[in-house]
Image 1: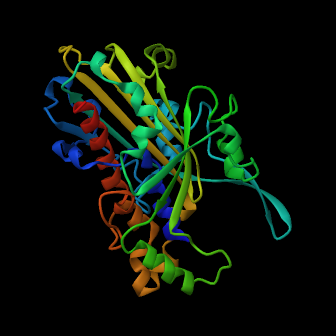
Image 2: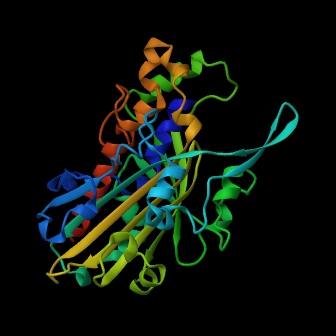
Image 3: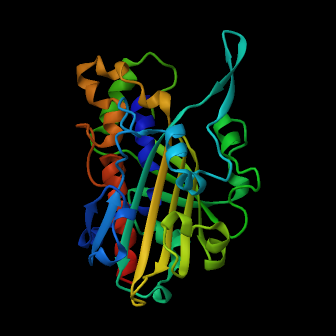
Amino acid sequence: MWTLRAIALLAGFACLAAPAQAQEFRLQDVASIAGVPIAQLKPKTIVFADRPSDDLIDAGTGFMRYEDWARARPVQRQFLVLYPGYTEPDLDLIINGAKRHYREKLHMYVAEARVALSRPAASLDLARLATLPFVQQIDPAIKHRLIASADLAAPKEPKIVHNQDPQRRWCEGRAICIHSTYKLEGRLPTGIALANKIRDAAKKISDTLEFDSELVMLSPAEVAAAGLTKLTGLETPVAGALQQSIFYVNQVMQFGKLVAVFQQHPSDPKQTIATVFISLAVESNILGKRKEFAQIPILRNLVPAAVLSGKSSFNTGNSLSAGLPVYARNRVKAIAAILDSE
């Protein structure tokens, strides 16, 4: 089941896959967006960073250990976890009839991007980003429907219990909640079917991903109260911020978070600076699985780290099945393109 679990990470932000017009923007990979002065941002160019320094990367997986990320980037941890005070889950498991306390270790994928939009912040219709019609028009391969707090699964699964914000229930208030379904594309379903035949397990792997997320547009006052400009590093007036919290995925991803903050350009009021952050947390034991498929030649490229990194022959297309780096880049392009073309 490791393939499906790895690919589930790619489904974290399905609401914002890339439309064709997003190709008008180009990406410029940088070490850090903070290292690129606003004055040096070029038209139709998104500066993008998702490759941590060597001292932060876990060589065995290519991603950051949660504790390393939290220590090295405390501001990101403050705003890009599922809720304030979030920690790696502590679980009680029954092993050979004995109850054992266990901490679920996590690895992080974090991407950051910045782009100068050729529109004043006041002209952007940001409210429409937190609506179902907007979500539905982005990627026809992903099906979405609105859900309410009453539709959520009962808090029995440890992941659901741990991911519940202790201060409030998900999907209450003005935020909208969306249940999304995505059927894997390309060769991945074939690989999953083959893995199901080879594996000796009662539970078969599914080639369909299910996930729940909450979407809300924060007002300038809410952004100021939360201190989100600490994350962007800009102190210019804020038009609003889109926040998406993925609090449940049917497979291995523990949580996901998107924060997109829209601010006035420091020197040109006719432009808007959009800064986007994406964080995904996956169970470390999944990324560490290498031998199960690596020993079977036809499934060798289904090793989770390879699939997740977009380095597997099973990756395909430009959407969720392409691998996390490709998908994250296309998603940022989509946000920029849609806002720029309003």
